[in-house]
Image 1 (cartoon, rainbow, N blue to C red):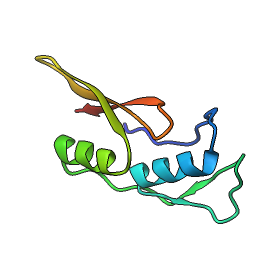
Image 2: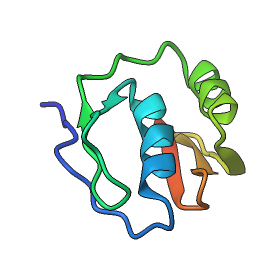
Image 3: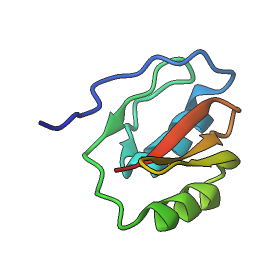
Image 4: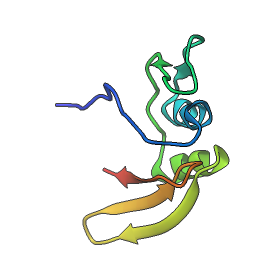
Length: 92
């Protein structure tokens, strides 16, 4: 079984800027008819190569690393997007 992203609603100050960040993260494009209040991301993303490479890619897109957690059974990094919304990159 796999999961797929269908839709997300986020309260933010600048939907177009934030949507461009997430479009880049997910390997998608922002629809041309998007507005500051309503944004649509198009196309499917691609798989990531490795956890470390994906972390570096996200940082290059403007994410900020908040913390790393590693246990015997799990590894994840908590990041913040360009408006400070937290999200996790989870290995596994």
